[in-house]
Amino acid sequence: MNLDPTDILREAMKLPPEARAALAGSLIESLEGPIDEGAEAAWATEIARRVQELESGAVKAVPWVAARRQIAGE
Image (tube, rainbow, N blue to C red; front, side, top):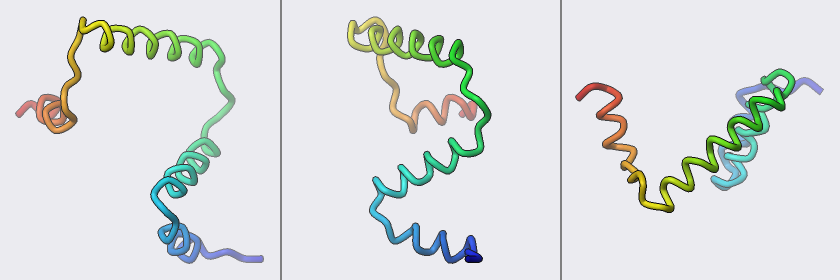
């Protein structure tokens, strides 16, 4: 069976947002190489640290719009 990527995309766009997000994640994962377990563990530790900082009030979240402006140097 020969599938046309344009047809696949057209059909995928009919899916609900959650299903499209899951599909997009699966496609991106399929492009990645082998998992670096050390990097995965380091990211898990970093994420836990950042969540703890947010929950404790040590840092405050910034809305994406404001963060984007700051990144752009506006």
